[in-house]
Each structure stands twice: as structure tokens, then as C-alpha cells.
Length: 224
Image 1 (cartoon, helix red, strand yellow):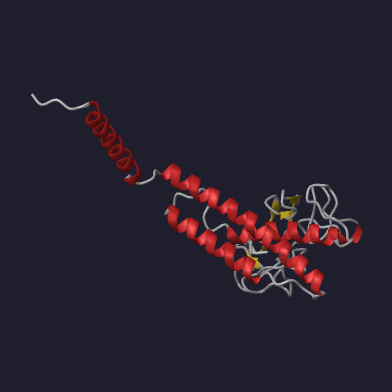
Image 2 (image 1 turned 30 degrees about the vertical axis):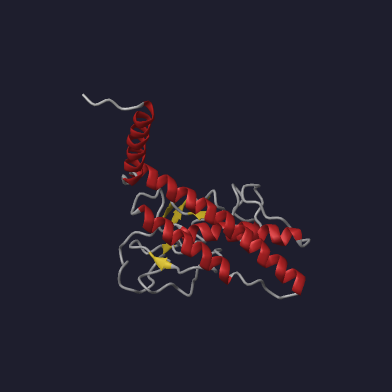
């Protein structure tokens, strides 16, 4: 029976170990690993995006520009998100959420830039409506500008505010579908099909977006 020297045995052991390691590396990552990698990549992209925005703001201030150019910032985070979600192949904890992320990050960056320039800092959650906030906590406006379900086009209900300082209309009730569906504004209908009565997201207190109409002839502000 052939025997091996200590050096040969050690070499064989290393070869086997290396083979096992390489074999393990060649195995496809689990869905959990892919999801974690996707989440991590998105968080890194968010950080770089915020830094990019501030750099653009600083450049605009230094050069006396009317507005900063964020084009490259948007292009980079869009590319990073697309790459992360594609690589995760459906395992990412969140998909197609970039528009919402951009809205949140843009608002925060704008608020701090305004404050740094001597303006008022806007903080969502402080109970004070400021900047592009539609509401803040229990503050839904004041006096003649106070918002409620009726002013937003619903028949009745209780208006609330989301954690992101936008109107929460889940407690509002639309008009009964008696004449609803004829594309005409009848009775207490806020809208009917494409007939919005001249209202827009902006006129209802939102920053921007596309206003729609629900099947119950109440305003659909999900696109605002």
C-alpha cells in the first residue's frame, strides 16, 4: 500500500479544501442572499444620490445659478436600482419603488437646502405644515384653508395625514353610485369618469400628479 509524505498529505488536504471552497462559491446564491444584496445596493445608491444632490446644490450656489442640475444624479440612481432589481431577479424586498424613494429624498434634500440658505426648515412630523407638505400630523390646514374629505371631493368621512405628510383619504366616503358612470357631474358627485370639474392634484393640495376618478365618483388622488 502506497503511503504519502506529510507534505503530500498537506497538499492533498489543501487541494480538497480549495475545491470545496470553489465549489461553494460556484453555487447560486439563495433568494435571501439575493434580496439582502439588492437591499444593500439600493441603500448605497440612495446615499450616493443624496450626496450628488447636495454637490449639485453647492455648485449652483457657488456659481450663482438659478437652479441646480440634478440630471446625472437621477441617471445614476436609476441605473443602480435597475441593476440591483435585475440581478435579484424578483428576490429584492422592494421592486419598482424608485419613484417613491426619489420623492422622499428630493423633499428632504430641498428642505435642508432651503434651511441652509436662510429659509425655514421643513420637518415632516413636527405638526407644522411647511414646504410641499399637504398636512402634518393632526394639522390639516387652518381657517378657510383647512382640508377635509368634502373639500377633497368626497361625500363625507374623516380625513387623516400619512407619515409622509400627504393626505390619507382612506377614511373618506365617496358618493353613492346612483347616477355615477354617465360621465356627467350629477348631484354631489365630485367627478364622473374623465369629468373632474376642473380640479387637479394641485387644486386639492398636492404638489403635483395626475388626478383620477374612482368608480364611486369621488376623486382618486393615488396618482397625486
